[in-house]
Image 1 (tube, rainbow, N blue to C red):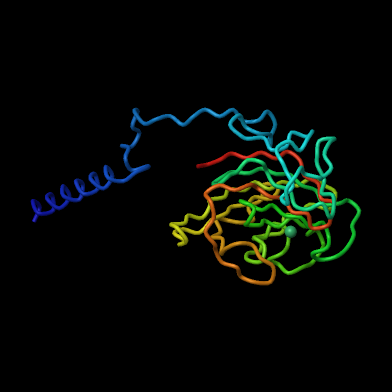
Image 2 (tube, protein in one colour):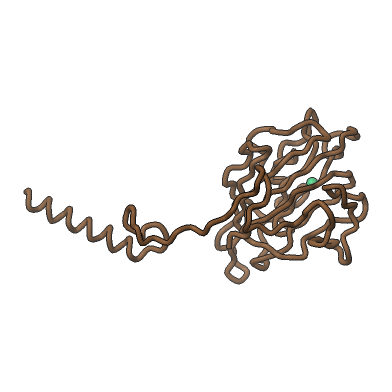
Length: 249
Ligand code: MG
């Protein structure tokens, strides 16, 4: 009986060891393995919320060099004095660079002067890959459909809590986005998203249901591995500042 148990344990240990050897990632290493590669050193920003050393800075407070109009040509939003602002009717803007998996930090403020209600108050949006929107809206004492309030994955998933500051104040989104994987036209793995608003978790590794659409469920359509980040002109003068991104692929 005892010998049998010992053999069983030995076989299990060998199976676990072999499985570990075959698996990529964490299980390749012994516990406390001194030969394990060290994580790269990244210097954090001097102040909380500032870009770390390995980030791509998408707005440094001065110009829109990293941006262009989503409809073609230069971005026509107003920039300077540390922020840029949506100029209504000039169209969405997008980055000149393309991104897939990423960590994004972006700060925004809806107009201090409150105008309109529901979706017409401080509406803009952060479109990961130009396709998947995290809603920007003045959701401070402003009711609307929950899957369209600030921090919602628009049309799909309301934020877990409403962590909005009053209009006119700066707010932050910290977003961790994993792009969808396609094999030809076939979806292999949907995108996932985690969002913190003003340091508060509002989307927890949510599986995105497909492209953002209005009043419909659009599903996924195959697209390139990297695409521009887009910001929405929804007709309201929303402001943005301190935007940086860390590609994770
Ligand atoms: Mg929007």
